[in-house]
Image (cartoon, rainbow, N blue to C red; front, side, top):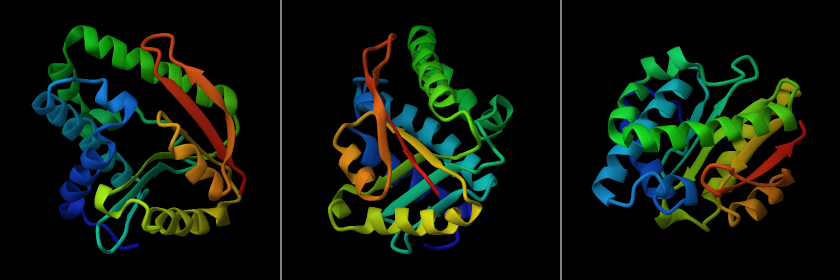
Length: 197
């Protein structure tokens, strides 16, 4: 892992866009490629800046893998924090109907997390590996590095994914599958997972 300064966040946002381009949920935000890129730039840009402000972001020295999480003392993304990080552009890009569906999906996922992991925990919001480096072990090495550092807090780690192909990867790193829940809004499934400290 390397330390990340605010000037090196843009390449990490581009990495997230590339890695999550075909993700079932993120790709559902817009069919048009140009529009989807703008939406993901805004969304991932805000999440990366938010994580950076809380010193909760790590990347490989090569820049081909990145992880963002919420620390134990930051239990959720706050509206004010996200607005400061630039999320305010998202409704302009999504439009009213898509924004309503987006927020309903986010609320569904957040309700799952509150129900499945009510005690203090770390929340792995994003883990991405550049497509050219997927399958090389770099994502697992970054994840293990993050988990090793954070295990000192003796706090469980929680995550969700919308891609069933990710479940075996996380299971290999000590996460247990809690279940699969389709969203009542858009039918996209969420797989929730937890790892004890």
